[in-house]
Amino acid sequence: MRYTEEEGGRLNNYAIEPKMYQAEPPDTAQKRNYAILGVVGAVIVGGLMAVAFAVS
Image (tube, rainbow, N blue to C red; front, side):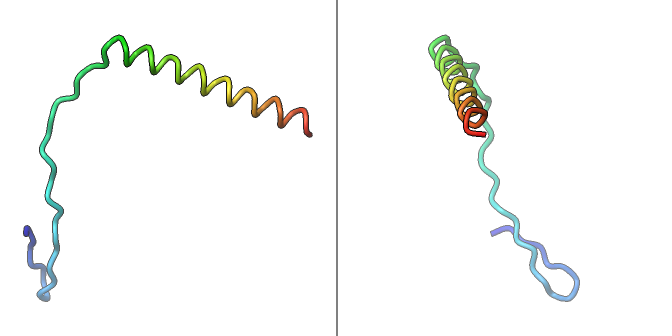
């Protein structure tokens, strides 16, 4: 365990850092899924706003 001892005998613990990796760009299927989810989210938000406007 990594720690340092400060003045007065207090211990300061540090978390173990995860290994680094390089992210890969999304492929065409993932890009399509992101676009579909964006459209679905926009429709849901628009629908909720319409319902809120109609109720008020």
